[in-house]
Amino acid sequence: INAEYMGELTSATPAVLGGAKDSKEYDPVEHKYSLEELAARFPSINLDDPSNSPGLTSEEAARRLEIFGKNLLTPPPQLPECIKFLMHFLHGLLLLLEGAALLAFVAYAIDPLHNLTNLYVAAVLIITVVLTAVAGYVDERSAGAIADSLLKLLPSTALVARDGRVDVLPVELIVPGDIVVVNVSQGRTSIPADLRIIHCNDCAVNHAPLTGEPDLLEREVNMSDPDPTRSKNMVFFGTLMGRGMCAGVVVRTGDKTEMGVIQRQCTKKDERTILQIEIDRYVWFVVWLSIVMAVGILALSLAVGIAVQVAFLNMIGMLCANVCEGLPATVTMCLKLTAAKLRENQVIVKQLACVETLGCTSCICSDKTGTLTQNNMTAVHIWY
Image (cartoon, rainbow, N blue to C red):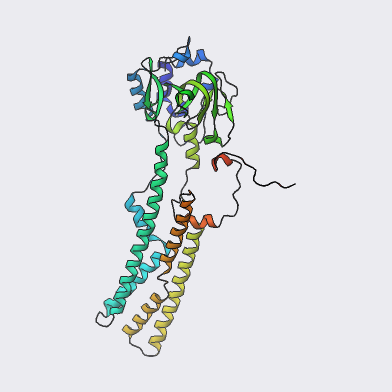
């Protein structure tokens, strides 16, 4: 990139490279430039023979890497494992059991000699809470590990022109201005960044990972549409080369690519599932019912002349009696069994609470079947 264009990139990086990090727009302009204009901005291009462009020098590439960062998509924020584990103890039903265990301890502390049963009840409740929380955490962590391992299947290297020769480099080290070669005959089919094509030969790409459309799209050097996502001289990070080869100059990397913009648009806070909403509703119902009944028992006991200490123990006993000690373990076990059954059918469940939501789903309506299936449309029933 020449000095003037490099100054634009460094002084107005958000505007030039796909907008600010939190921008929802994708607005590259390089697809509108002719090869002459592009070569004036990217000296790494050999205008006489674009297929033999020298690329950047190693020193310049290292400098760009410090400015623009690694060519990686920023993962969604992740909680530490200890926090994830502790979050399982805040489950609605487990909170109910924890409250019952606390009350049982209080009842035991009031009269330790004659209330050993309350101590046993509290111990059983605590053991139930711990085992249920551990079971849920272990299952979700194993599912998350499987999902994360799928990322390792993505290509980690690309053919990049550096110092006048084409080398195999890690994808994360690609920077704007690099010349990248994608050749199906060499087994290189993954597009490692957003590229403006400067040379191609019988080139066609598959945008299914980006749009869900399975058909191959022809690519060429010249602009075909003012919209960069529709122009035939652009290829995008995460898509696949279906035929031929192309060489292109990198114009966007990492979060500033089209795929990065879409990821930011789709990233949102986790919503509560139907099961969680219903459980919370049930917990509050039990809590208020228990409080009303306990207060009634306390008032009735005092009214008939029962000692205050005994009346208070009766109230705590009523509160504990309304708690379904086995319900959390039963719900967790049912969800685990369902998740195991889904895993046999190659479905990974990262959160157990989502299993019940999937069970409530009767129909999925989508106009992008390629993003949900194997990208093959097959007729299985015909009515006539």
